[in-house]
Image (cartoon, rainbow, N blue to C red; front, side, top):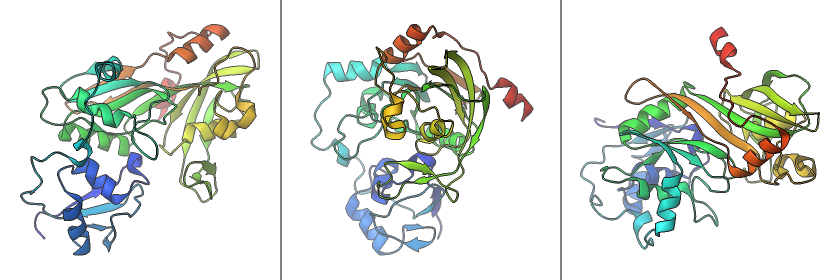
Length: 332
């Protein structure tokens, strides 16, 4: 059929419901109309008929028929109906996170404890505040990747559909370089290396926890020990080669050095005695990604307060901007 398009499910859309995917990517398409398209088989996943509640997996292909003139165009989006107006404090909070902005891209230094998207019992999240960043732009800003709720740092937002497509391609094709800083308990046996440990959802946890599994999805992370305080704790830089859920957090336990504050994967061993904060010490420090308008976008995000206090406590350099993985990149 002429006009039919196909879109692949991206890593950050993994485990979304199909109706949520359409709500995010086609906000003017009403649920009733989507239901009709599904009933008549015009919308399919990997060529198969599905329901609106179908769960998505990275790499799946969604068939989208020509939508024509949308009868819902111009009407308020579902998420806008009944939504309260933003307070000055809420608007200021999201604007204070902006560390870079141009006509195509916004980059936030996301605060720890703030979810990227809504979910069960989550009403405060980055996606809900993106209207505050729209300004005079005709399009609402769009998420192109995500961070865990308790992970802070670099979060890239697209300002246009064209930018979203370009940035998503870069993430999907692994043409991005992301470096995370973490404070871990103990010191890895090796000062640098690569963790290659496939990951899968842990049974019975509804996808809330991941585990190392021989038949899981490929998961690879490079690491480099930046500094240590005796052998009690270490500052480790991680560079994920793949982008699985909780990848760095699980791979840190593979090294027998859980991330400080990560009780989910490190249990009691993830907490240090004394004045060290019990918050998760994992920060998306920097990203190098192809800019949608050409060139390379390189962004570095400052540490959140609780991690800066820990760095100061152990005498680590909070201003270090060296790239411990530069030689590895040149060799590849």
